[in-house]
Length: 165
Image 1: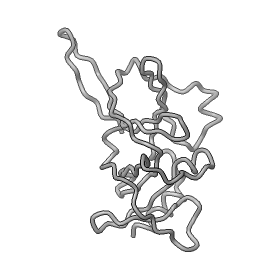
Image 2: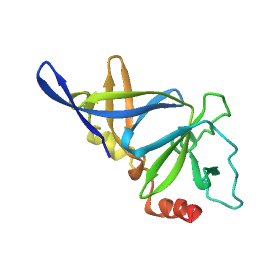
Image 3: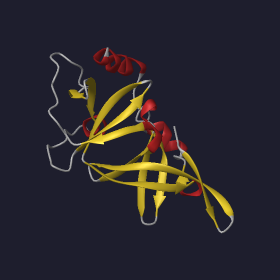
Image 4: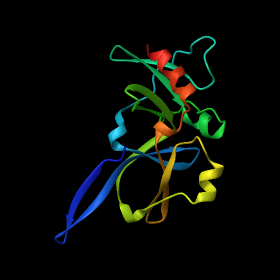
């Protein structure tokens, strides 16, 4: 879900999209602002016995139990180190909340539609199931834009929902 904003520049209205930018494995990713509920500092993640590799564990946030996914492990097969810069981004996913553990959250950026490129067809075929939405171009930087609703299979979403219920 992209959050559109209209910006008046020189009497013209331009459409922009806003993204929360975070890092994983030295790469920058962006999530649409409208999907992010909040960003919290890491806290104790309680590991669930015999749980799926997908779920790192759960946290309690204002009396809500929220499953947490280590997105670096999901995308790169590398467990996120426990660092002071780590953050958990709480996102809405199909009507319930999920935390994603990331290396760092750096900023909110606005991208004009002309600065968002679709993935080339070859890349779309190779990287299925990651929720890649496009590529944001910020001067000399590239931000990988994600749609987390597309990053998980139906079975994985069911696993996450079972933890919440």
